[in-house]
Length: 265
Length: 101
Image: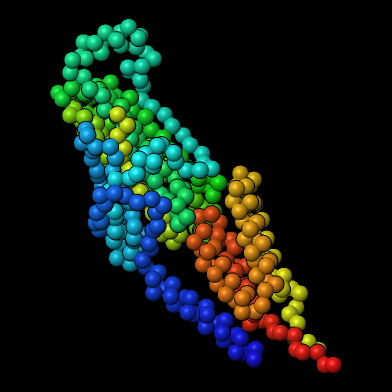
């Protein structure tokens, strides 16, 4: 009798293990809202010596009359290093700038050349001079990793807010923001911010790296955002670039990458 | 003589769950209180499952193991040993034989 029960337990475990192994190479990621006008595409990464995959960067853009676009991972095959991505328009309710919960955060900005340092009168004069042909464009790009229960474990955001007149951009207020879920042991171990405020380009670009050495059975998992950038052009269009990857212990495969480009003005 | 499971065996799953909870507390400190609060429910589930009939215990152990792996980034791996102990417990223990009149 004892042997029979023992065999039952072993059989159950074996079935469970076999079922997991058959599907182990494919990770599917559920998201808590739908994208409209969505399309799917494949992204092929490069396998590394430690069994991880380095995924190529990508870009997305918004014309002056477009509000938002989101790209996210829906499936990842760890054997072939191929990710199935989904691109579409996120619902309006998700366009605010909320990030992780129970987290730590850091933010900053480039020197504000059109704000506190300029007197209000000088600013008014300058704006009047170019008012006839002046437009404003602003937006942000967010890149974040989400765990299986849809908690954002860390997030990087680059923002720009600039003026343009179809021949030049100026007055870029470039800012950045990073958040990480300290409640579950994430910490930030790297950061860099660059920006541009030139006639041909308004830009904000962030590099960040985060580490969790707690929740993957003692193994370290890194998420690296190298980099998350947003460019504003002289026709008011926004363009974003991202290149992010996970490395370290096997639990990295439970994290899915998401990116969103949103116009705020 | 009976085949009643040894007390240690019956206490093993809850003890492992409490150990997982303490491990999170030790590693992350009280800053992780939202997780610690949530994981009290997991300890309760393990305690309830331990007292359940053998087959229920086995199924609960497998189900909890899957849930705990899914919650890896919330600390789920710390509780997988307790779920596996639930699975192992039925094979290590047996029903008490019927008493003679």
